[in-house]
Length: 322
Image 1 (cartoon, rainbow, N blue to C red):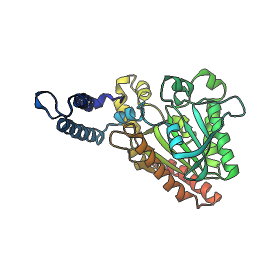
Image 2 (image 1 turned 180 degrees about the vertical axis):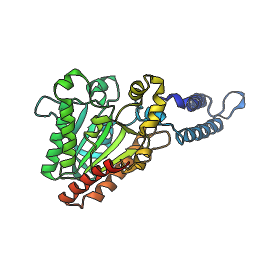
Image 3 (image 1 turned 180 degrees about the horizontal axis):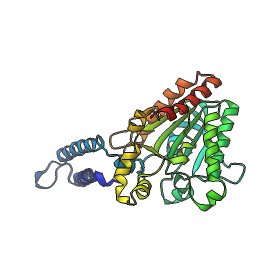
Image 4 (image 1 turned 90 degrees about the vertical axis):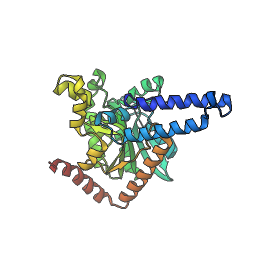
């Protein structure tokens, strides 16, 4: 069953009515009560709902984009891996403490080419969300990412990452095992690894937990994804001491894909189906695959030295832009 966001209420009402009419149509064989033509009325309402949906999504506010990015029915990292990759072999453990299922990854083939794939996985139902800790990794997750990236470098395999996390897990257990150090070393590994690294923000890119696997040669974002050092709610609580200021915080953070592209912090914005990736997951995943293939082809001809030099200059340039 489709889940609707607060600002989609008008579309939800229309689609509910369409569903009711279709149910009547199946019972009445095309004609309903009072001579109403069910098929014609359904088509009329569907057109109206589509128009409203296009209007809504053409002018989303930053906070509404945050809601879309967090939508529970958006495709997650494992959906992309299972749809875009073949011969996927998951690898587990950081060889230090244990395995963190908030961060998944392993060996795979992307359009026939061997790659290492890494992603933060939120889960799709209560059981899987608990198992994956809602996509918030602990130190062992980031150390697993480091291990996989170094393995990719050893065998000359490109790295593809999928980012969808509210941030690293802030629990006492994570802090006790060196969360900050693990994230810092993961970022350093991203910057130093001598193979192409293409990162894609598919939902929420939160703070260091996202950057830890996203400091690559190319950074892509879905149209309604977000990428920020802090959530709007947390920023509002800190700066204004008022959670109701979240809309202002979202605006100030410049966290949308469109803002980040203008600032030069990401490379490419991937268009989503009307209504967001959650409406047509297969189409959204296919668009991401096409974008990754194009970006990967653009860097694969570079030598190891060129890759590192360009990556270094890319991130140094971000510090120079006012």
